Image (cartoon, rainbow, N blue to C red; front, side):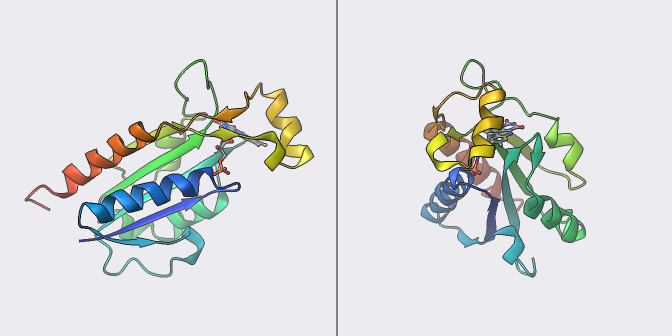
Length: 165
Ligand SMILES: Cc1cc2nc3c(=O)[nH]c(=O)nc-3n(C[C@H](O)[C@H](O)[C@H](O)COP(=O)(O)O)c2cc1C
């Protein structure tokens, strides 16, 4: 079974999560294609997709949304998992799906959508980004929970390993 793991990211937080998911899938014996959404030219031969995007100003990144539009038909024929990475509500609460991205965005039927907490490191950002993040009350730190990400991936592995697939 061949799985595409793809993610849109500006500052690496979301791609590092995609890399961890891809690695775990490979360790479980799956063939994994790891590509940026804008580099994908076909889904022929792909049996499942995991797509992630960082959230900026309550939106998924354009490369991720246009991937969903370009491949809408093909994606609706195979299982798709999606994750968002954001800081809305973090660290006080678990991260919120800022503008109900899961349901609104997905013309594609997804098995499951998760929002993972991301990372805010001001020194990596432009002045403009820093100002917006500060105004939004972002707290400095890396809030990714790798055990949680592994557990989510294990759920996908379990689902894809079912004999009916
Ligand atoms: C300018 C700016 C706007 C952001 N807007 C949101 C937002 O609307 N909702 C949210 O949950 N997180 C928001 N974030 C937090 C980012 O999603 C978070 O830093 C994420 O880890 C970035 O991922 P990346 O490194 O893959 O680009 C914003 C961050 C910046 C710098």
